[in-house]
Amino acid sequence: MRAIALLSGGLDSTLAAKVVMEQGVELEALNFLTVFCTCTNRGETCLASQKAVENLGIPLRILNVSEEYLSVVKHPRHGYGRNMNPCIDCRIFMLKKTKAYMEEVGSAFIVTGEVLGQRPMSQRKDAMRLIEKEAGLEGLILRPLSAKVLPTTIPEKEGWVDREKLLNISGRSRKPQMELADHFGIRDYPCPAGGCLLTDPGFAKRMKDLLLHKPDFPLNDVHLLKMGRHFRLSHLVKLVVGRNEEENQKIQTFAQGEDILLKVASLPGPLSLLRGKPDEGDIEKAAAITAHYSKAKDLGKVEATYRGVEEDQPRSLSVSPISRVEIEKMMIHE
Image 1: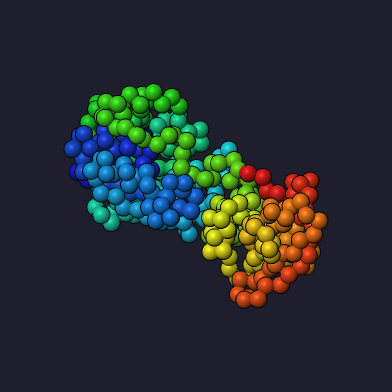
Image 2 (image 1 turned 30 degrees about the vertical axis):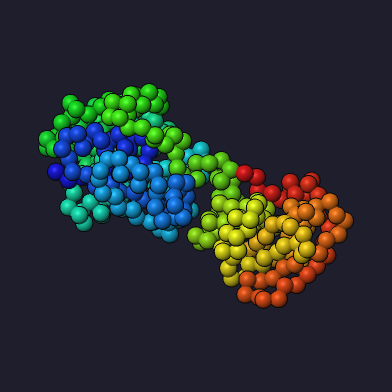
């Protein structure tokens, strides 16, 4: 019997796969990659899931769904969690994709590492039923770690897996999973904090600001949220200031269209990106903020340069580094 295991690479999904494999089920792991994942290698693969399948000895298919997933984040039918995490809609989206892949490769059911009651939004019994129904997968999602405290699934009824060999874990304690990991000899697994930026309070503040001022944002804007210091100059204008040389290079890479790049002319400092529809006052303010984070922050006046992405010749202006008090008024805090 063949099945698809949704594998984040965390302990729960790894254990769930192992429990089912012990019953002779042939598994293929599926991992969904989005721009919000925190365990990726240059956005190409999930390092945690890659390591997990190497230990399990099963094949892995990675699907990058970043572009499609933006619509889930912008318009979640079932709302957000504590931060900007649309957990229920996210789960429905991923499971619909999994169903299509399952049918494509001829697998019989889906295995997940979900634990009843572990996550307050998406791992309640009512939420699990809702998610299964909307994904069109009623009875076809096996949750081996909590199977004995959940309704019997089709794989159990059909005898594809033995329900007696599944588990009855529930709640937020990690002790049962750690004991099971020790039993299977699974070591060096990721912490249970999760690998989604949308659950991070600091990142969520930036996302809320972006959604408020630019509801139809593209993927490029999300990439920018992951770097630098962020400032809201007006409803239409935003500034991103690099914090180190690596971020300066990334900002340069993601600059596009009518963006304006700024830096201090003759002293070390950040590269800043001004995005939106800035007027001359916005450019001057952006230059003053850039100067504040440079070696010129204690000088009275400093020369800053700015240019459009497609322009070769920068223009210059003289500004005074902005005060910390003014900085605080415009900063989108992490």
